Length: 439
Image 1 (cartoon, rainbow, N blue to C red):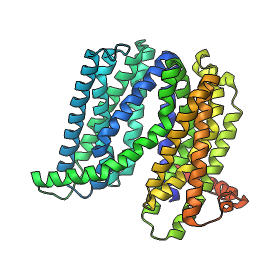
Image 2: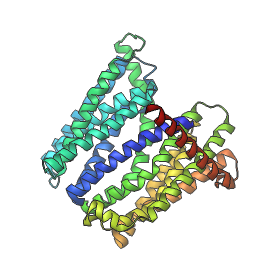
Image 3: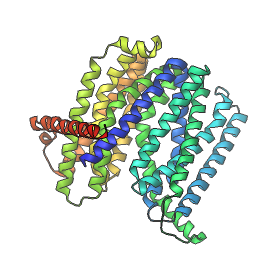
């Protein structure tokens, strides 16, 4: 498990650094208002893509090793085309009814293409994950982030294209190139030949919908739980406020890298371990590790001066440090909660995550607008942290009740700190040995 976690952290670290540079280019050269427009566009594309995810998401991952490759791809790409055509017709109708007069029409018409590219790349990524080709999938994630960074740097710094189209061109270019590279790799994957028939496709479609709809609904609600603030800010404040808040949230979420990496590996371990005692032990250790490492990162952020953020991103982001401080408590609660959620998911109880996500939406919908009226964008950060704190408490109660253990075992002890230091030293020694071998 340790080796898998270290590799995953390494891949996500590289991707996070590239994404941070991408965010810096967007915020510094395009400004907070355009960055807010980009955030809103990306959010719309993400949530519409969830409809495609019914087929192209976890259901495809689950059936990738159980069904014909040709059948899976025919069904997946047909579904993507159906959603794209339906979306284009819907947008055209709304424009004719002047229901989108305040939104750039050219930008709205490009949404079906962005959604289709996102889902097409997801098809091959989930197929790779389904065949346990995790290293290749991680490389494609890094490649995607790198292509986006290179293209937007050329467009903004080189050609001085300083509007939302710089993002759109970088997005479409990066996803198109990665899709071609994925196609070359996936074609070479040898699978058992299966005969394709209309009947077999019908059966597979039914199975994928049966598996995909409840799973995708839960994931969508969880994502909405974490991003509903964007809709409130864009509606009650300005896109400039949204750009600043989005950047602050993206910076703080970089501290979730360790928590996400450990949680992802924990899920696979729990799903393949029948012993409940081992699963509880792994979850407790993961919970403590994530708590210690995340808190260490938070303490580091507390000492970063506001002048550093102004120097990096410009005077438009002068309140960025305050937003980050308002989000840090929520970051801690959310990062540690991930380990408990993965325990329930791996144990066959994904409904717990569903309940917690629904509760989170109710809480933040109730308190965010009043707090924003009094404290502007800082109120959005405070309400987000409060929502994650309540979700954390509820998750703890579910976990303690399910496992029948005492709450005191969740508190990190002295030996847990020493174990992390020992592990860090072992990783350092191993990296040093590998470096000397390559010289």
